[in-house]
Length: 559
Ligand SMILES: Nc1ncnc2c1ncn2[C@@H]1O[C@H](COP(=O)(O)OP(=O)(O)OP(=O)(O)O)[C@@H](O)[C@H]1O
View 1: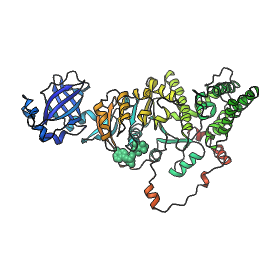
View 2: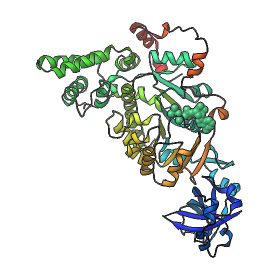
View 3: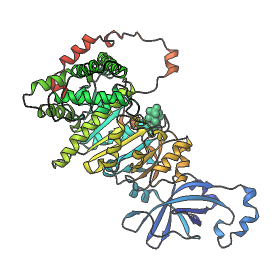
View 4: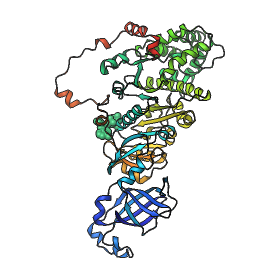
């Protein structure tokens, strides 16, 4: 359908065109596609903004200047569209080799031709908002290998979007390897519905609470202190390396000495076994030698408190990994490295692994994630070098907590490294955040695909614009007007950028996600249920008992 004529071509890829009044209803919506003929085929463009004028203005003198365009003479409604690529009769190519010229006719793209462009990917995420009959898909290869970001203000539909992607992966790729850092335990119900989705959570009280709430027995996670690098140990002790330099120095020497008791060539970060008590003993001996150093006493106190924290027994008293270590009879460093591989390579078994960390404080979450991701990095890069790549996608919820802009976090270095170098080792990254402005720009800049849902904060919009290729100001400004579940999708995994109504996860897969906001209205208008928390307020001994009863097979995920 012909709808108007090009009046102006500007910027690198923006086309302004006048629209006939009676065609306006079909076209005056962001996300509608139009096309214009060029020498090598048809150039396609997506409507991004409008300039609709009122009667008075329309009748003013300016209109008389529009000689030569009789079709748009009675009106001066203008729309701006962004050129996205062209079709040369055989295939669609991004970018346009030649710009349309003022005066050229503009047509509405049909649902059929749009479908041929948007439905070639493996991951079906939703439908075009303005053409609900047109499915919108993403290329799995591009999504994983070029990384992606799901950004939006809270409640706009980020988790729903991630769940739809995970649901698609789980249904279509039986040997997918995905690790989801599930900061708020939102995706756990997916494990109940699908046999290739499993939950791993810190052994102890949290695992028990998850079992009670969701009826799923999580595979117990242990992250032994000895498997942590110096930064992660500093993280759980709440030492900021840029400030607590003296304490970090003591810690560094002690960790190194502890590792060298078993393997004399160990460096501070090598995963060589030691017990927390050995570390404490080394620090105490150092304290005797440095009698008046309060910073060292303070460090010892912090470590003692850490060892007493029952929530952290999955780090400080990892019974099952200890059992595994003792069961091996080889020499060091092999013995530690085999144990390390045993603990972490289970996270790499095919399937979707939900690392559920809800309930832990954010310091502990970041140190746990840093350790897990560093082990991932070690194992996957070694697999690639050994000629057996294990392509893995890592999705990080609340990514601004783990990889913040302008602030240190134990997980920052490894996540930035994955963003910059992961591609060549087959590690894909998907970051999810409600605060793009607080997210490392290094990571955002590496994300080839953007899925941006409603974002009202101008600063967030500015960051999205500044760090993503392929995204134009006109598109980003429209983000505040999106509805819940509507996303602007752009970048390498999408053939054409689009405004997409992401499928409703519950409607599509038949169950709801967890971790939702508490319904205050309901809670305050219905009588409370009887609460029996006794079982979950475990004492130290009971928790230890629970860890003791976990078999090495359970722990390694060998059912
Ligand atoms: N595509 C969609 N279609 C219909 N409803 C949706 C869609 N996406 C999200 N919703 C609904 O909007 C609400 C918020 O969605 P969701 O939890 O995915 O948002 P979020 O951005 O992850 O929020 P938060 O930042 O709080 O985690 C949910 O009740 C969900 O059912």
